[in-house]
Image (cartoon, rainbow, N blue to C red):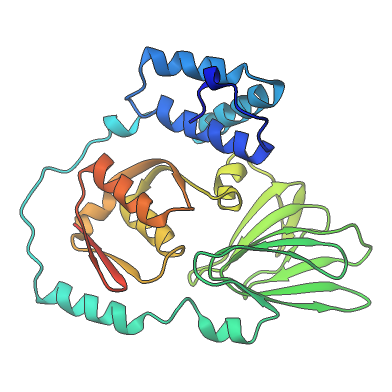
Amino acid sequence: MIDALSMPAPQPISDISDDALDWQVLLHSGNATDADRGRYLRWRNLSPAHAQAAQEAEALWGDLGQTRTAAELTLPAPRRRRWGSALAASLVLALVGYGGWQQAPALLADYHTAVGQQQRITLADGSHVLLNSGSALSVDFTDGQRRVLLKAGEALFEPASDPRPFVVDAGGEPVQGSGAVFSVRRNGGGNRVVIAQGEAQVGDRLLQATPDARALTAWQRGKLIFNGKPLREVLAELERYQHGRIVLSDQQLGAMQVSGVFDLDDPQGLLRTLEQRYALKVTYLPWLAVVY
């Protein structure tokens, strides 16, 4: 956090935006004091850039529909848990099945990222692509079409102006968004397309930008944002950014709702935050974390 009284040197806009999100986490945590709120107001008034970042962060939090603070979420009653043979078997299968985030597609792709890595790419036509963790894509440009094949993971696309259609194929319905900024995530159960700006054709449907697009693409700024997401989904998302597996010892616990803004620069720190905020326990083993 930045203390307004310290008069820091000018920051990059991205750093100011990150600080603005951190302020929202504190102010909605249920632990903010009057002094914290006063410090926030002073930070907000440091410069027009600070004021704009604060306004955008406040709007983003509102778009999430946040109605309860983390401290107000109902936690399950503590109970004794034993790890039986079924869990032991699932752990063995989890470790045996772990293959490094679809390494085969990455080996055959034009561009790919390792787990926890992001990469910015400029294509031959000037289009910009941001590859998320554990992702892979190939490019097939012809005189009549600009085609990108997303073989694994997730990517954010900013197509350059060009008369040729810009099409992303992720194994499902193709996405054509020559005049849009959008992300595509390849999932086993169906791809997820998020329109951040403009509109794009997905199959036979025309999709436009939605208010929650900034939250769903917050990974490009090193953030994960959750609003009432089940713990099992939060852990599955976190697993995409670190080596090894994260396993729940109690599937009922997986239904617990989680809200907050978390920093991708420290995935292990995110697990520690979940431990502290939601009274969880985590046992760390080589290539495995067990949550109970």
